[in-house]
Length: 507
Image (tube, rainbow, N blue to C red; front, side, top):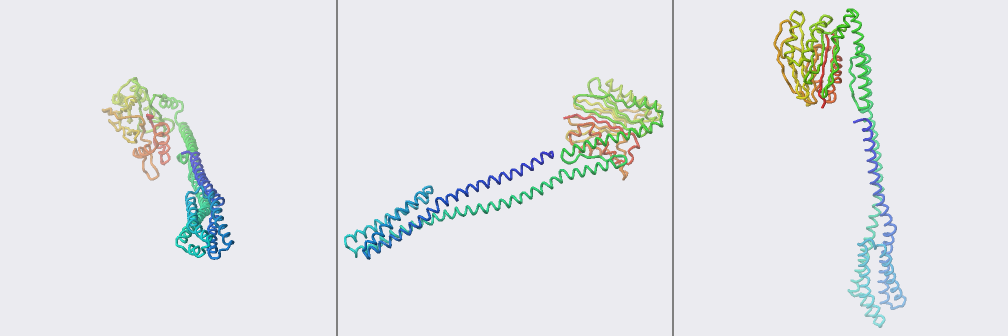
């Protein structure tokens, strides 16, 4: 993931947390405002009117008793006024609880029980008093039916008052709950901001500062080492990795320039005009482009500019690719001359369409009186059939890595090319899309590190299989990485010629 995408992900994550918190707070805020409005506009007035109504009903009961005992006009007036006030207060409560079905039902019960009390208690007493039967009226005020009706009325009224106060308390608790919730959310927001800040710092350190520090150290090692052989790996996010790739490319160019200068200085000790002509004839390799194949080869001399190693690539008459990698024993000018003599013969055999084992038999004839021996690997890559065929005359086994990272080797199929002759056979293996063939001379795998250990074919296989598929199917890039890895660990890199040839089949 690129650094840009990582930063965008963190930003979107922070925005999502903030937006979610804001939406949640807005919902709670509007709920609290609604509850407060209901408390202020509905429940408070309803509660006040309901309590006043209970008081009016109690006043009416006392006035009824006074009227039955004293029979004064004033007590009758107080009775009528109290009943009228209770009715008026119930009507005041009604619009406030109209949107609350439970309270509306309780108010209806109060009105109904008040009417029952008036019908069963008030009206009989006032009728008896009007007819002059005071004793009867006093008896009616103490009657069970009157008391029962009054008790039901007061109980219904108290239920209404309690229900209104309960809902008012719930609304008040909701407002208090929002205040508490706001405090908690603000606390969580502060903690989240702190965590995000710490996470941002850690991410910055991991994704940017550490890769930059590692790149700085690799650049320092690559520039301070006398041979500049420290490989600069591509680490960190793509933006920093691309800088490392460019730095590694510059390092490789620097090493090549150093090698060229070193070879040029050593070449001054050889016969320069003759050496130049032979080198050109020996090292020139036609640029081969075959659809479905990626080819790269390189050869480095251990002494001067003449090398006993070489590689060659030929398009055969049937459209397949012919490859040769060979190594003449020794190094310097004389093995280089032998290589110049042998190379055209192998090239011609491939161009003629001969099989690898037939080419080996013909090549052996040129060495019948030579004091040198040659290891050679002749390969035919058939990209249409998805196969690779080879004959190996005592050469280092070429590495084949398939797309699934399984590895195999092009093992020898006969003896070295020498004056002794010999017999060779051709073997075949699969070479499907995503596969890589890497052939090399012994100068690559016999280089030693400070502990004296060589860069074995097993080490080579592990390194190549450890690379990503896009690197493996890029013949030049995987070759440069292998050379850089082997050269970095080696303390005797220039002890022998090194030639490397890679062919890959892109997916």
